[in-house]
Image 1 (cartoon, rainbow, N blue to C red):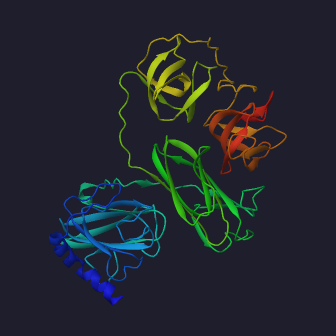
Image 2 (tube, helix red, strand yellow; image 1 turned 180 degrees about the vertical axis):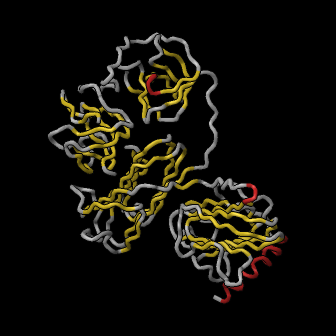
Image 3 (tube, rainbow, N blue to C red; image 1 turned 60 degrees about the vertical axis):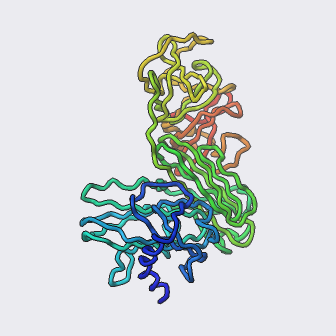
Length: 483
């Protein structure tokens, strides 16, 4: 440890030498805003403890790295590596806020205080995806900064930024981790295929767990078990990257669509997928199974820094419904695609009374109801292939073949009619996994739909924190009703 601490004190000497002798090398990764004009000396170690001589030493021009599941340099492993990065930086007098976003552990040292404690420290208790901050008052002059970083497994990234609070706190433009503000519903099964009713149901803060060779919860076997986590969470509009690392199989479903499907034996591999989401409530389901030996699961969801999308030239609509069908003809036409709340599309035309609008959805021309869009400008009257019936004040939300007109819509509250309970399924299909039931009279919030399947309308709902799909009825009978 003495040798390690001595290295802390002499890193700035390396900075002086390396600035003269070493060529600049750019680390692969997505750049974020970094302090201009600061050259850092980085030492990379092939172990997570900063032990021994560094395997790679080089200059860096900014602390904005996203290594993902890869290595920061040749000779450094993708997991279980560490780095020490330092520089001498001039500051004007003032109070500065330092921001760090790191996966996994990190320490920030400023001028090596007499008590030898870092200004910020999550090195042995990582908080990946959480924005870390520390306010520090600095005198005018040069101050020595050092960041110690440790990567354990899964994704690896490090972003560092600071600002003088005299100019107001603007914050960094790091990729934004999703902070789930509601608990997940966790279901555990004593089989490895999510079969039957769950043996244990409880609420948890996250699907991320490291069980090792132990049972995940009391009453569940240590091997050959499976689990499902469900959450309904309001998210801002943006592009989200979902990353999971699992031993063994894992599946991620967003708004009823499978975006990661790695349902096989594995040893901790990391899988990623990017999805564009509108502002609103979204359902996320994470499914997992364990075979034998070690068991662990890591789940992260990060929103990319936002960019401004210019509005279309001329007339356009902005979608106000959570999910809105786009049809090839007004009212009774076939659904050809769907748009979501907050999205903006150019107007192609309208019907005579402007109750339906024809829009261009990324090259697909279709019709949307004027009830669920905000219109800017206008458009030419377009002849429609079929007459437009006047929507009923109650039954105005569309009709699935073989079923009554739907009475529900996203954002509404609904209730199961008296009699039997309604099943909740993972997908809008009678063959999808059963994940729960809503009792007769049970209240739920409608999140999405309708989706036409099995001669009925299916709605995605949230019932007491469990998110799933349920049928509105069958034949001439409604099983659900507006509340």
